[in-house]
Length: 619
Image (tube, rainbow, N blue to C red; front, side):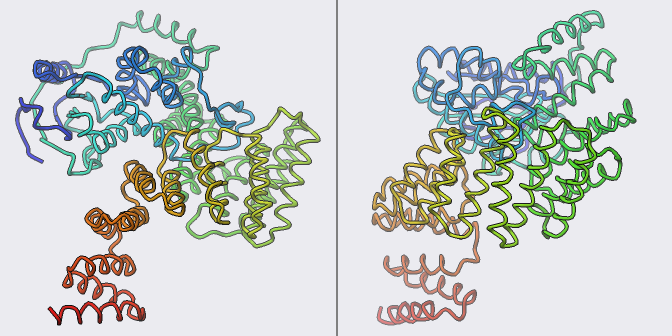
């Protein structure tokens, strides 16, 4: 990365790279970028200048503007791409729901907040990003564009997902789009803003000494009018609420109404948690908890609500120790039974599923404490039954992990009976599907695959658009050798979701077993494009290339796999055999020497080395 004092004039030399501009925020920086982009337009590039201020415009700030500008052209010339990426588009542009309907909504997507008992996996947001990158690649291929230049102003103020999008866009599509990216950051920006980029995709680092001259917000009266307009928009409209909440919060803060801004900030954090945007939700929830102590220190339930969001974020981001601190603090701070049983359940799940050292006994202790608290909470009978069954469902997980499988199944079945007795068939369909899925998982644990697949199929009947279920059923069919059924399920999982690497790798495994090696390579390549740090998939693709007689790409994949994880003696042995067959005897011996150091008791390694040494001696 070169350090410069001015923006490079020949942008075509920076294709596939990210140029970093460090300068004070404000109109002077923006004008410098506009001048740079204008020169790029003269060279025939399509250019965008996008402001990425999460606190003002929401976590998708910048990316929303890019899509809003592109979508009219895409709708006109490639409407099939809009349909293909409907889910990703409405997630980033909620108001787009007024224009299109999402084809494949799961129960997690549509469940009422009171029935929302399953959080999205953390990688769901990652899938949205990858789907939008696919959209941009496909659109570029169909458009008349020759080069794209995208400048992300205030990149250091952007949300976590926009930063991830920019990094992934450069990695996956930098060369495909003839793309140059510029990120503009302030001198006080945290170092990880730039350091998270892979160095191979970084270009020049430019310092400009520019004045700090942000455009001031509107006057107090104008901001007051804007606040009224925005409050009216979001009052009874969930779509507008998601779109305009960040702006409303910004204007309330700017207009000296921080207490009211706090109330809306809690709503925004809850919305982001619900959507699975955990990194951004975490940052907002942390700030909200600090403000809670300032403005409303005696509101115990509100404090618990923010703490519970923090706990969900930490758990989803694989930070269980931080989650434990938050929820145990929350438990100590309350004497309310309706909060105690909820805290106890979260702590029990930490001990059962998440902590570095699991403790099923402690998990059960907290579940029993929570069950007792439910009795003292003043709940309507239907809510009481719901929380009791949720608690016993947690106990079923513990029993399954203790090897008490029949008891686990009976607990889940009891929960289903209780729910059926109290609720109509249309209520809590998501929770019922989860109970059926849990029964299926227990049967899978004891290798009763027929019953496992039966209960998972019942689950899919209730929630047919949840991609993970189809992927899981594909795994179970694969495990019993029913490869055609596995492949059918994996392909349906792909149809129902924005792209994720696991399911494409699974498709590759199916094609290899079916002897369709070319298709296997294509599926593995798709998986690795989405997530390149997959040791096992590089090995699998190397073996597929060997089957096709394509030895150079096979060697390249073995090399990459061993860069990811060098301590793999059997992969070294595989590469050694390929080296041997290609006549690279010295390289084969070196690999076998390394493998023997790692696995000295492996007889095959010693035999293969003897063969390679003998061949060397006959040269």
